[in-house]
Amino acid sequence: MNEMLKTIEYLTFLEGFLTENRKSKFLEILQLRTQHFTVAIEDVFQMHNTSAVMRSCEVFGVQEVHVVEQKYGKKIDTEIAMGAQKWVDIKQYPSIQNCISGLREKGYQIIATTPHTDSCLLEDFDISKKAAFFFGTEKDGLSEEVMQQADGFLKIPMVGFTESLNISVAASIILQSVTQRLRNSTINWQLSEEEIFLKRIDWAKKTIKDCDRVEERYLEALGNK
Image (tube, rainbow, N blue to C red; front, side, top):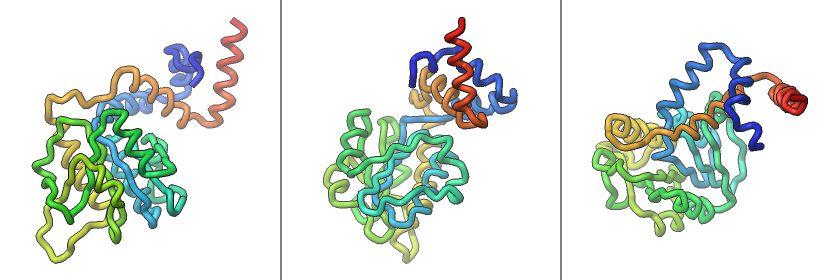
C-alpha cells in the first residue's frame, strides 16, 4: 500500500463515507480479531467446503485463511462464504511447502487435524503458542507432506461409528473451542494497533462504492495542497 494511503488523515477521509454505526461495528469486531491462530486448507476438492471454512474463520474471529490449491485450482464459492471473504485475509499458495514455510517464518506451529493418529484431544490442546490448523479432505485427509512436517496432531473426540467429520464442521468445532479459551485467557491474542489501523482502511475501502474514484479524489486533493 502506498505510504500516503496509510495515514490517519486518509482513514479519516475514508470513514467520512461510512455511517457512525458502521465505523463502531468495525472497531468492535477488530477488537475481537486474532492472528494467534490461523487455518490452512489443503486441496479441498469441493470448494464450497473451503468457502464454509472461511465463513467459520470470520464468525470466530480468525483473521487469516491460507489456501493451497495445487491440484484443483477452484474459485471461492461466494454464496457459501456469504461475504466472509471480504472480512478475512485469504492467502493463496502454489504448493503445500510454500504454505508451511511461510507460516513457520511467522512463528506458527503446524498442527495437523486428523482423527487417525495418536493426537491431542481438542480440550487438552495448548493454546499458549501460535498455531496454524491444517485441514484436508474428508476422504483422503492431509497429505503425507503435512503429516511428516507437523509439530503436533489434533483431533475432536467422537463416540459414534463415523470416523470423520466434514471439513467445515470440524473447523467450526475446533475454532469455537480454541478461540473461546483464548479470549478467556491472559494471552496477548489481539491484533496490534497498527494491524487494526490497516484493517480499518481495508474494510472501509471494501465498503465504499466505487472506492477507486474516491481514492483518486483524495490523492488529487493531497497533490493540490
